Image (cartoon, rainbow, N blue to C red; front, side, top):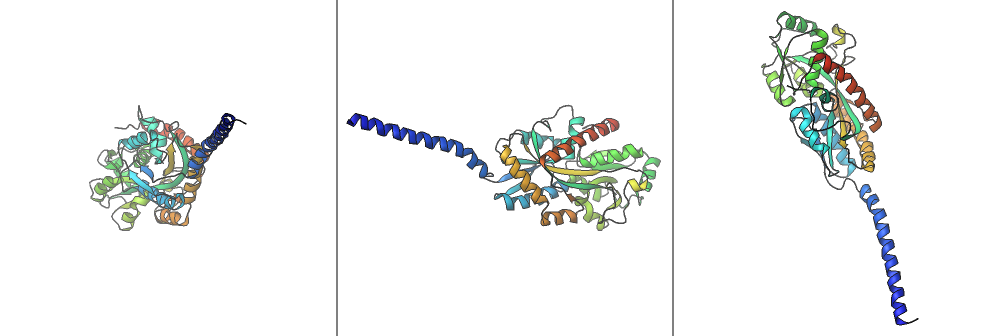
Length: 333
């Protein structure tokens, strides 16, 4: 073999080895990247102001996910526009490390009360898991002369337009809950929207509002302290935390149920392997003893189902609230 032939042989061997190494790297790269996810901190966006049920559910979830994902999961409150601003932002996120707390309003109601949204709840997001259901409580300020729902209905009917209720914003769960009650009980009571549950509660506790419907986690402490009076629960059955408070159904409206719900969603571009991992870990997180105890303390029910089950649940809720919004003529402003 001539020196030239030997050099050619060595060149071909080196080229083959390099090609094989590159092929191996290209095949292993995605797998290694997927296995390492998340590779940095994960942002869990809450589309509402701090102080409500959404934050309680989000923080309970984030705390447990931080333990199992190997990266910190932190809560980022982004209120405004009935949750639409945050939903639109997360729908466009491409970093593979941004999630959002989906909600009855943003996923099932807003599509029917807003003419135009900066997101499509079905196209732009992947459902991960239904995290929790939170019973809606109907409360009044202690100065309101009504001890129960029947007395409150009689009071409002006697002076239609005199009383007002607050909510965390147009299209929020509290707004829906009160409009739903107004529809079935034939009431006329003014709606005052706020930018979140926290500001709403400030005015309610101060007596600048007469009534509201708020998720149990955010107001149980005030009810037990006597700063608010619960006149009914929107749950199917009485709550162990409030055994003496009858449900709306018990007080003359059979079949009535109003429950807020929260679920974890990801931008539609999240890789399938990441979705599978996140779904398994988030369901595990919300079902953990620590999270269950935290939610149970506030009368919230931990769920933790599969992406397919959550998607089916969202579809059912969209059909339900499409009809309610049309009948009650709920508008964003």
